[in-house]
Length: 342
Figure 1 (cartoon, one colour):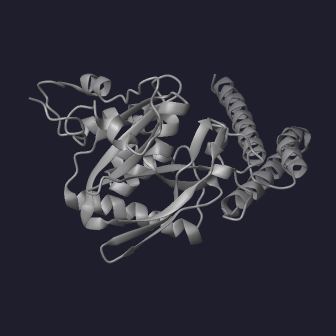
Figure 2 (tube, rainbow, N blue to C red):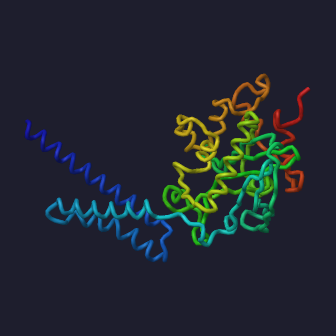
């Protein structure tokens, strides 16, 4: 019986080893396929060759030499992957071609390249950017924006900073896509996109979602003290400026639109590891649980479900992306965003 049990354990170990090597082969193939290697023939060739070599090692005898060969392949791929540098000098898709820069001079925050595209359709637009200066002591609000394009589980999440002069600066943490690649959700798990901060006029960043793509967009006021608002805004300013000289990789799991907000806000680790960070459509619910939304009238909006329904941006069919867009989208929202209640 002891010998039979040992044989079963040996067989189980062999199968576990095969599964592990197989998974490493698939991960390696994906890492190469979604890499930024050029030319494309090299990238595609290596993504096919790596799993084939991992499989071929099964016929190497003695078996330990096959395992050693696979280990060398995996270690070589890992060494390349961790040293593969992000870059700022690629040929980018037009909406990511010009990065923002931001810096502080006393009470003034200077932002270069605030995006302000004029959209005709989701793929047809007139590119435009402008430079702006914002007074730090004029920062009055921070709004959380969630935009849903399919289902309720996944949403794009970003912030908009409001100032006493009526202006808003929307900042979105996104993938910086190269012109030669189409967008891919899977690619975000590998070294495929650089990290990119879009600084934009709300008519661009929110307007394209409400009026052009017709996504479901929600806007919530964050319940932050003036000190926390200032700290959060300055952390974005510093991150934007740092990317100019030190590009970073985007990662869907560890460095995405939601984790970036939590990191900038200094959220506790347990919230950064919350399942709602990955299923970003639930980010606003998490913020509600953290008591970060509002303050709202709890008699009128007793729970998150009611607040969520009341916070959707509704645009009339004949709406235009005019200069009053920021004011218009807040007109019907619940206090403190909307008109005072009697």
